[in-house]
Image (tube, rainbow, N blue to C red; front, side, top):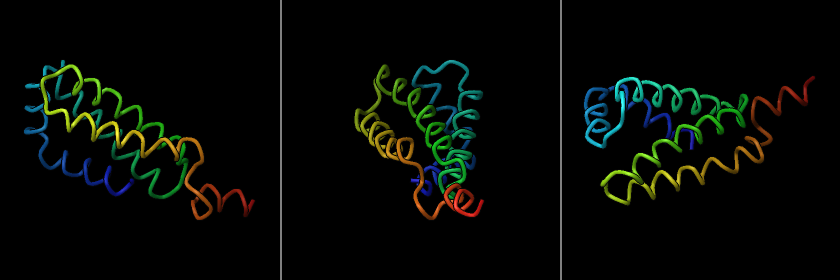
Length: 114
Protein backbone atom coordinates (compact mmCIF):
# COMPACT_ATOMS: atom_id res chain seq x y z
CA UNK A 1 0.00 0.00 0.00
CA UNK A 2 2.79 2.39 0.89
CA UNK A 3 4.47 1.93 -2.49
CA UNK A 4 1.22 2.64 -4.34
CA UNK A 5 0.60 5.86 -2.42
CA UNK A 6 4.23 6.94 -2.73
CA UNK A 7 4.05 6.38 -6.48
CA UNK A 8 0.84 8.39 -6.60
CA UNK A 9 2.36 11.27 -4.63
CA UNK A 10 5.62 11.43 -6.59
CA UNK A 11 3.82 11.15 -9.91
CA UNK A 12 1.45 13.89 -8.81
CA UNK A 13 4.34 16.17 -7.88
CA UNK A 14 5.97 15.49 -11.25
CA UNK A 15 2.77 16.32 -13.18
CA UNK A 16 1.31 18.89 -10.81
CA UNK A 17 -0.19 21.24 -13.43
CA UNK A 18 -1.89 18.41 -15.31
CA UNK A 19 -3.31 17.02 -12.09
CA UNK A 20 -4.65 20.43 -11.06
CA UNK A 21 -6.21 20.83 -14.49
CA UNK A 22 -7.95 17.47 -14.18
CA UNK A 23 -9.22 18.38 -10.72
CA UNK A 24 -10.48 21.70 -12.02
CA UNK A 25 -12.31 19.91 -14.85
CA UNK A 26 -14.05 17.74 -12.24
CA UNK A 27 -15.34 20.88 -10.54
CA UNK A 28 -13.11 20.98 -7.47
CA UNK A 29 -12.80 24.32 -5.71
CA UNK A 30 -9.24 25.70 -5.37
CA UNK A 31 -7.59 22.85 -7.33
CA UNK A 32 -3.97 23.97 -6.67
CA UNK A 33 -4.43 24.03 -2.90
CA UNK A 34 -6.41 20.80 -2.96
CA UNK A 35 -3.78 19.10 -5.12
CA UNK A 36 -0.92 20.21 -2.90
CA UNK A 37 -2.74 19.13 0.25
CA UNK A 38 -3.72 15.74 -1.17
CA UNK A 39 -0.22 15.01 -2.44
CA UNK A 40 1.30 15.98 0.92
CA UNK A 41 -1.19 13.71 2.72
CA UNK A 42 -0.40 10.82 0.37
CA UNK A 43 3.36 11.35 0.67
CA UNK A 44 3.52 11.57 4.47
CA UNK A 45 0.94 8.80 4.91
CA UNK A 46 2.94 6.51 2.60
CA UNK A 47 6.20 7.23 4.43
CA UNK A 48 4.55 6.56 7.78
CA UNK A 49 2.94 3.34 6.59
CA UNK A 50 6.05 2.14 4.75
CA UNK A 51 8.33 2.61 7.74
CA UNK A 52 5.77 1.41 10.25
CA UNK A 53 6.30 4.56 12.30
CA UNK A 54 2.94 5.79 13.61
CA UNK A 55 1.41 3.52 10.97
CA UNK A 56 -2.13 3.81 12.30
CA UNK A 57 -1.93 7.57 12.11
CA UNK A 58 -0.45 7.35 8.61
CA UNK A 59 -3.20 4.99 7.46
CA UNK A 60 -5.81 7.31 8.95
CA UNK A 61 -4.18 10.19 7.09
CA UNK A 62 -4.39 8.23 3.84
CA UNK A 63 -8.04 7.39 4.50
CA UNK A 64 -8.80 11.05 5.17
CA UNK A 65 -7.12 11.89 1.87
CA UNK A 66 -9.10 9.27 -0.02
CA UNK A 67 -12.52 10.31 1.24
CA UNK A 68 -12.57 13.72 -0.51
CA UNK A 69 -11.17 12.10 -3.65
CA UNK A 70 -13.95 9.51 -3.62
CA UNK A 71 -16.54 12.23 -3.00
CA UNK A 72 -15.29 14.33 -5.93
CA UNK A 73 -15.34 11.27 -8.17
CA UNK A 74 -18.82 10.32 -6.95
CA UNK A 75 -20.34 13.74 -7.61
CA UNK A 76 -18.62 14.32 -10.96
CA UNK A 77 -19.19 12.68 -14.28
CA UNK A 78 -15.85 10.88 -14.15
CA UNK A 79 -15.44 7.25 -15.10
CA UNK A 80 -16.94 5.13 -12.27
CA UNK A 81 -13.88 2.87 -12.28
CA UNK A 82 -11.90 5.69 -10.63
CA UNK A 83 -14.42 5.81 -7.79
CA UNK A 84 -14.11 2.05 -7.34
CA UNK A 85 -10.32 2.35 -7.30
CA UNK A 86 -10.49 5.03 -4.58
CA UNK A 87 -12.86 2.88 -2.52
CA UNK A 88 -10.61 -0.17 -2.99
CA UNK A 89 -7.60 1.83 -1.78
CA UNK A 90 -9.66 2.98 1.20
CA UNK A 91 -10.45 -0.65 1.96
CA UNK A 92 -6.74 -1.42 1.72
CA UNK A 93 -5.76 1.05 4.44
CA UNK A 94 -8.54 0.09 6.88
CA UNK A 95 -6.71 -2.99 8.23
CA UNK A 96 -3.70 -0.80 9.01
CA UNK A 97 -5.93 1.59 10.95
CA UNK A 98 -7.37 -1.32 12.90
CA UNK A 99 -4.27 -3.44 13.53
CA UNK A 100 -1.21 -1.30 12.85
CA UNK A 101 1.73 -2.24 10.65
CA UNK A 102 2.72 -5.53 12.26
CA UNK A 103 5.59 -7.15 14.13
CA UNK A 104 8.44 -5.72 12.06
CA UNK A 105 7.34 -2.10 12.12
CA UNK A 106 9.31 0.63 13.85
CA UNK A 107 6.44 1.10 16.31
CA UNK A 108 6.59 -2.56 17.37
CA UNK A 109 10.38 -2.57 17.58
CA UNK A 110 10.33 0.55 19.78
CA UNK A 111 7.67 -1.02 22.02
CA UNK A 112 9.63 -4.26 22.45
CA UNK A 113 13.00 -2.58 23.05
CA UNK A 114 11.73 -0.09 25.60
